[in-house]
Image 1 (cartoon, rainbow, N blue to C red):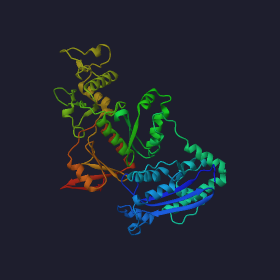
Image 2 (spheres, one colour; image 1 turned 90 degrees about the horizontal axis):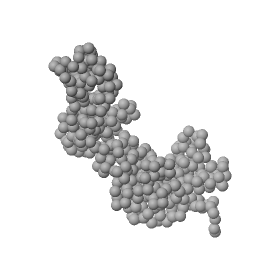
Image 3 (cartoon, one colour; image 1 turned 60 degrees about the horizontal axis):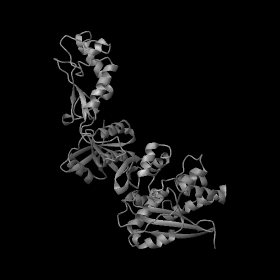
Image 4 (tube, one colour; image 1 turned 135 degrees about the vertical axis):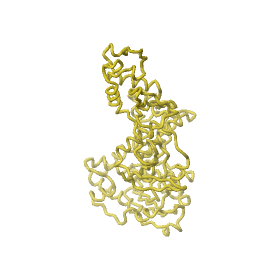
Length: 474
């Protein structure tokens, strides 16, 4: 029988964790709605990997339950036929879809259905509702649940929610919202919409490639898909984005545990790959800083510490951190003029014996060069003017780890050692040796530590091949 009403597959899956590249599916539940009739498809899946205890407690799915079940590869063809030509409906649909997409890919099946996220549908239909997670929908709409966090039962919740929406707004309005949500995004002609569709709404780093896999641009976001789409949307009005979008031929992405991991990965990849559209976050071999040198012979002396002798986190009285000597000189000169400091005493101008600097004649120096202002007062004013540029001494006794979900981002003396997920990986980071200081990483760490109440910071101690972790005590 021919009908204009699409067929919907309400889908939920259970997994061993949250990452499609690492974790596996343990259960799949599907309720198909076709011409007003419902049918059920439900399978436990042997993931081939251990199920963490916390996941067992959450879902109730134990190793004994899946021990004799088939693998995903063995049921893939049956599942594909079950979902074929149906609109894929799930809550936080990118999670379920990305796991199934990755699993199908391992067996050589391209799984690319039309996808509806009931979170987005709920936001459209109930814009004044504060939250749209599944537990909120249960409470607000009086949905009935047998076993929460079991695939078929959670899929049943989505079907109940669908019928609630149909009852409140009518079938026609509901189908119009579906059609709008399914509307293809506005993309350049050479960008495959299927390529963008599979990008997750999760934190991470994305990479734009030109022809021949030349890296054009690397960026990071808390929501990868939304950020990538924003480039193409802005290309209609922004000249730089238009130039970028015309050259993009492929897109890759790497998911991270959160925003911090994305920042760190973006910084590293830009320095490794040197994309043509990225200007900031480039590696500098000429990093330098000003250092105030206290001496009875010359109490106002400043010297430029170059990259070879620079040890941020150890050295006191460091100011700035500049990408080049030119930038350092320009900055010090601007500070001197703004604060009426003597450019002669600062080494920016050659002083003749018993003569003032040029700035004194044009009222840009208070006369420290000829004794009208004491050199001690001049030094105090210099330190005050530079205070915002002061490079902080590393505030911890050794290395620390900032925990972001399952990831441990490890730092020591303003350097990023790497990210680990267990003690073995931590030990490997310490054994790799001290990394090179990086100004962009320094800025990222400083900002994170100012917001450290948002993170779990651990004190690390490495001894005889083992990394010990303790909560940081100040």
